[in-house]
Length: 313
Length: 313
Image (cartoon, rainbow over all chains, first blue to last red; front, side):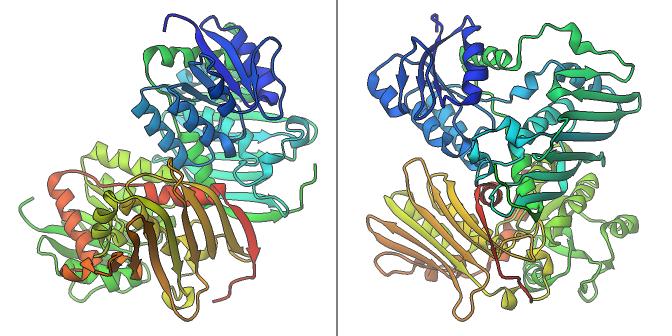
């Protein structure tokens, strides 16, 4: 299309206001044409609708939607948008189940529109340099430590610990989206332990042991109960020393102590996501990598479950 | 290959002796060349090995393996077999995780061997006639009732209620393999409830509500605690009346009361599976439909979990 992509932002919660609105404003190829939210606030001077049916009924010219609602309700909205011929940007995780994502992909392909399963952490500045370093390095062990305080980072987001809300995998899937990007070979779960609060349907912590065909040990420690210092770290032991990704991929320290990510300009993860979205819309393609979501489903399927004390926010 | 497929059967438990051995014996294109099992018994006059490494070390000429071990240990054996260039037949479910099945498929493709994810229930005599009937019929509702007594059907199979053993989805995935075959459109989970015995890591019962893009209601009731009459039934309400599949797909009753499956010769589900395996080996292709396993992983991911009384066999 010759005009900028006219985008409606659906689900005006914390992530929409903190990340999507500024990233869209900074992208010359995308214009925020509408916001949609039952409870959340809109953006000054941008038309606001209560739900996607109201948006459709308005007749406003829309090319694409970006969905920031909780995963449990995302599929139905995405299906409505695809039926309108609108391109669809899905916040992570791309859905509450793998089957619905496969079905959205098939519907998008049939409709000739672009579907984007976004993984914002892959756009953190340390990720691509880490991938490049590891491409030709023998890897011995990977340790993922993702420990954050749910009360600090997810206030009022009760849906996270409800069924389909992913629990600690809501942040943990960010780590998995990085590890699946930087490691040169696919891997799979060998063993997992999930801690479920007695009053919740999603885990508050998880410990997972992965491996690959070469027997590489990959361990992940996800915990939502971390008080004090927070950790979003990935350590990769190689035959050239240990590579460290800190701060959710923002900071890369190579074994020699150098920090290549400091040399690149920081555009922000969501700027990278919207750049990519505009790119696939222009190219008429989709970008749907289900590997991180598949690992989460596998952890639920394969894991032992431990009941822990109830969680009260 | 011009000679019959020389097949090693791995994991000599109940299903191997009850179904695989007779189906192989009845197939002119396959010969049972070896059995492999740490605890199970072999077959008279067929070489027996303790594990796949012993089989490999023996130098016996093998073309294919059929894996009947519990899903938790299947991947490593399958990977060893693929590395030998052997074709691989996987009992259902094809693995303990979706990622490992994807990886086996990639390894099989790279090695140029055939991988078969078997779904024996799809070879029940009522399934294909049901599929044909439903292909051009408006469907209103689907009800799956799969209720069996774990103590009767799975004596001594403690792995079923352990992590990665699938629990009630071990039989339930058979129902899902039929429903995904007979319905003309893909579907996805909207809601699920899983009952976990307090002392088990896999559910003993599950109630699942699926839907598809057209809003078709599909309900599944899986229960391992069924005493008295057992149920393996699928009811499909259509605008031409209700179609019933009984006995795990063995018996089809169409809305007019006719039973087309009675007209076809009964070769048995495992005869059908080995016929198909020989066919894909000859054609140099693979047959790996992950849809049933994906629904199970989705149920664990999406479901509410209810703790019920401990299970003691």
